[in-house]
Length: 233
Image 1: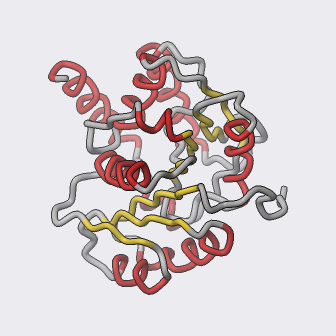
Image 2: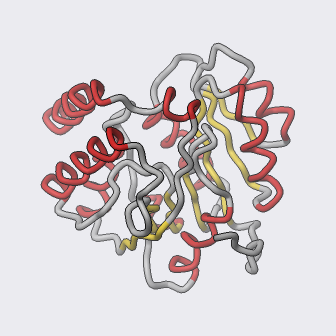
């Protein structure tokens, strides 16, 4: 469903886009974002392609890691920057073309209404017919794991489209740099007592996004990183 442009001012919204080698799709993603939201922050995680140059030419704010640190670290870099910039609302948005800009307003509505501190995008609240079968199995397993560890009743544990109030974002401190950060983030939402809601969003699966996305073989690596992170925190 296509939503009309945001009715509220978008000046208080910062959209964080973690990027690693997304040059083939990043320009289109940023053009769509910047049409609706002026404060787009790209965190270039030491890309080897032209991602950083494309982001800079788009008009987005670009932060660069001099070493590849992973998506979790990129999100925290962007969140820290947005908090220092007095953002009232902070949105995380993947750079691979999977997310729709119009879904951001869906996430912001409960935050602006004061009914939630965090809005989590979920691809499982509406039709799931577009999700490849193997990806659906992996995502369902991640949900069961996250429910057991975070005790949050979520339907989608690894959706990169999320929105936070300034207060909620200030309570988030991601230390698991790579993909285990998604489970850590849910842990922190629960332990901080933040009010959360899930919002139906659409994830677009393309040959490119499937090639870039998590593979079933990575599940064990993510679990290992998460458990090690819990032990050393």
